[in-house]
Length: 186
Image (cartoon, rainbow, N blue to C red; front, side):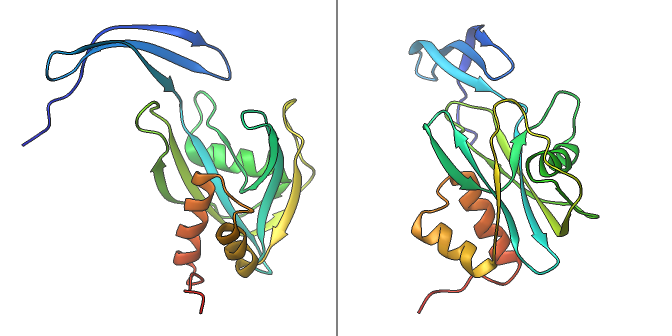
């Protein structure tokens, strides 16, 4: 039997900016309880790109993230712009953040990122045989250093927490498994 859904009785936007769209809902739960302040962050989603060079190294980016106030290491990633497909966003983000490109970029899978308070999804793409093509084209809020890692080093980085952003950890595990490089440590 299908679980009963929550019913939205009122909705308004508290914030509607380039960086954040936050909706305030009044909801009625299946038992009749009314919740006046249920907030949902709306998003077009974002892309995460697992780019691998011809020598097998994975392209990583190290950048400051204001929400947590520190520099982190992750895969190239970014928001999907209005009117842009996830594939177009993946190609654009890879070029802008790293100056790398690839002849082929293929969709791998999508992840739900925060279903309690957001409608956002992360779309994972694989870019084999990535190569440098020009220079970075960073946004005003980006200060990115590009790093390369072998698959073994990448596995170590997610195991020991050097890469700890959940969508990126999930993406890396999926790709290591897909590439046959996820093995139990003995």
